[in-house]
Image (tube, rainbow, N blue to C red):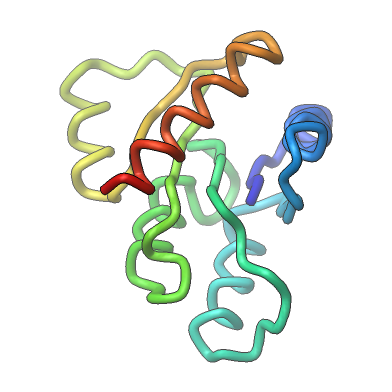
Amino acid sequence: MIVEDEADIRNLVAMMASVWGHTTLTFESGGKAWEWLDSVAAGTYGQPLPEFALMDIRMPGKMGHEVAARIRQTAAVAHIPVVLMTAFVLSDEERRQMMQSSGVDAIINKPLPDFMQLRQILHDIISRKQKG
C-alpha cells in the first residue's frame, strides 16, 4: 500500500515494490486511503490486502500518521508494517511521539534511499513485524 500525493514518487515506489514481488495498491491522498479503509472495515473490499504500508506524512487532508492510526484500528490490516516517509526534519521527540501514538513501525527521510537500500529497509521491517 503506497500513499503519496506526489505522483512521481508514488509511481516510482509502486514500480519498485512491484519489481520486488509485491502487488501494489496506490492512493494519491490520505483521504482516498481512508475511504479504502472504510471498505476494508465494512468487509466490502474483496481484493488481496497489502503486506505493508508506505505513506507520506504530509499530504492534503488526512496525514500519513492519521491513516497509520486508522490502519491500527482496522482489524484486517492492523498487523501490517507501517512506514512513513517525510521530507521534513523531525526531532527525536516528534519521531518517537508519532511512532508511539500512530503505531508506526518506522519513519524514513526523503530523498528516499537508493533502490536496494529501500528494499532492504522495508524487508527488514516486514521481517521484524512478522516475527512479532
